[in-house]
Length: 260
Image (cartoon, rainbow, N blue to C red; front, side, top):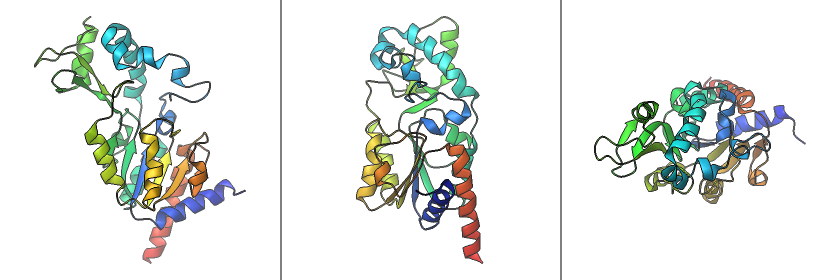
């Protein structure tokens, strides 16, 4: 069995040998920034509350007050959060010319705060509100200010339609434009780096299989095992913030050495 140090070295070599890396990040990418994940055994948010009661589009429309109170409470951790060492390591990897872009399941915008470029947000984000009638986008504060004043059916100033956080709820499909952008990003991918995703939420969970089908290699850093572990070149079950900075430091050393 390979040691952690051997796996870190192997992943660094894979990255150096690749020119078109795409990262897929899930909730495990942000837990080290103080944001709870959803599905970890015993501690995941959906083990504490029913997602179909508090995070489905049907429950939101049916009882917006109850849902908005829950969202405002959980949103506090998101708005306070700052990028961790894992986010910063990805940005550094991009500046080294290795990382093409990031596909993320997260709505916290921590990749943006870490100055990473070329990000596709599968599930939207928590920093915007969207009109369910005309599609107008607002800063989330526009909606929150209405709620704080006691209006639990916040509305669009253009058409008076109902507003919702611009995140994908249970029961909503992913935006077709989002899926198209993701497909374009992976079209020439030669290494797919999965970071902190359990790979159980579809259609996102299909992407490792998609990249393997076009000849790309797969590497995974995730605390829990995933169904794709056996197909990966390297699998590291550890914290991203502990592992990825070490990997990127080795990558930088190897790149600089190759330039000499």
